[in-house]
Length: 234
Image 1 (cartoon, rainbow, N blue to C red):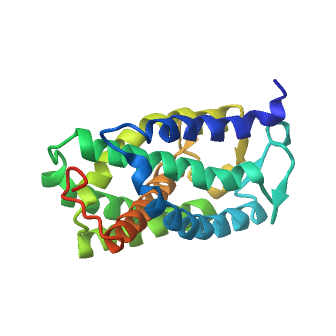
Image 2 (image 1 turned 45 degrees about the vertical axis):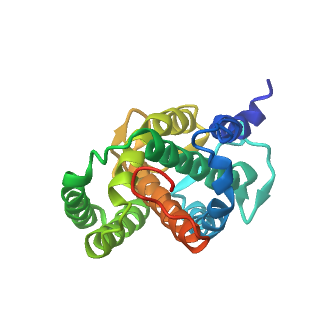
C-alpha cells in the first residue's frame, strides 16, 4: 500500500470499530450520535486553532511521506480528521463503560486525581513555561483542573475512568504517529520526556480534548431530554 495513505488509514481504523459497534442493541450508541457532533465541531475548532499555531511555531510538523498532501490552513486533511475520529472513539468508550461498568469505582478518589492534576500542572508550568507545547498543554490542564475542583461535574469520575481506559488505544494510535513518525515533534518546545515515543504532553493534551468533548456531549444530551444516572443512560 502507498505510504501516503498511512495517516488516513490510522484515522479510519480509529473510528471503524466504534461506528460498527454503535449499533449494539444494548449500548445503542448510534442513538446519541446527534449529541456528539456539536461538541466535536466546537472542541475541534478550538484545538485546530492551536494545531495551526503549533505548525507555525514548529512545535510539530508532518511527515509528507505518510500524508496525502491535501491541506487546509497548513494542516493536513488527516490531522483535521484526527479531531473527529479520536474524540468520537473516546466518547464511545465512555458510553460503553457507563453501560457495562455499573459501579462508580473512581468516585472516592476523584477529588484526589483532580488535585494531583492541578499540582502537577503548576509544577510543569514552573519548569517549562518557556516551551510552547508545554505552556499551552499544562496551562489548559491547570484551568481544566480548577474547573473540576470548582464545579465537580456529576460525570467526572466516569470521565476519569474513560480517560484511563482510553490510554490503551491512545498508545496504539499515538505510538504509530510518533514512531514512524507521521508527526514530528520539536523537543525544543516540550519537556523532552517521552513514554516510548509519545511526548509527555500528549497524555494531557488528550485528557483535555476528551473532557471538552464529553462535557459538550453531556450538555447537549441533557438539553435534548436524555439524562444520565452515572452508570447508564436512562
